[in-house]
Image (cartoon, rainbow, N blue to C red):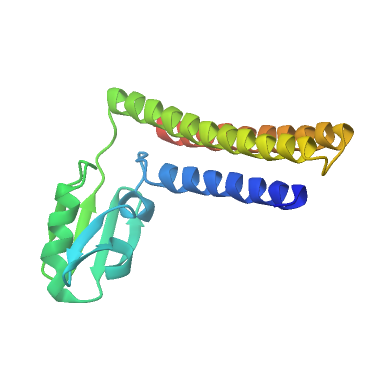
Length: 186
């Protein structure tokens, strides 16, 4: 793998780490109802586990309520069971055609736990980004030892990797801070 390919690969992998963080943060509850709350719920339907969003449309007609409309009415019981079984603490109400979920306001303790979880997720993504940096630097060192690039090129590339790492770590921190603000907002 050439050094240019290593740089592109590192950037792609760091972008993926940020994407994973964004996805994880969207599933964290705030005081408002958002379809992202139930995105991670997997439903046992048609003999396999499927994401809820593939089996139903999810909307938030009010700030404290989610409405789930199954595409196939026969899956409504499985969807309800999956929501109850998920670790979200939500109580679905099924009227036979749609499922309504009232989102209760968050207590201060729950908000603090959510913020702690946000910090954990942010740190996990930063660890992933640093691991990618380490891998890229290893390849750059190997290329220099194999005389494929000069010492100056090696140092320049390592600096590029460092800048890339700082950029993505900052992005992870900013995403986490924004989500913390959402969670702590009354």
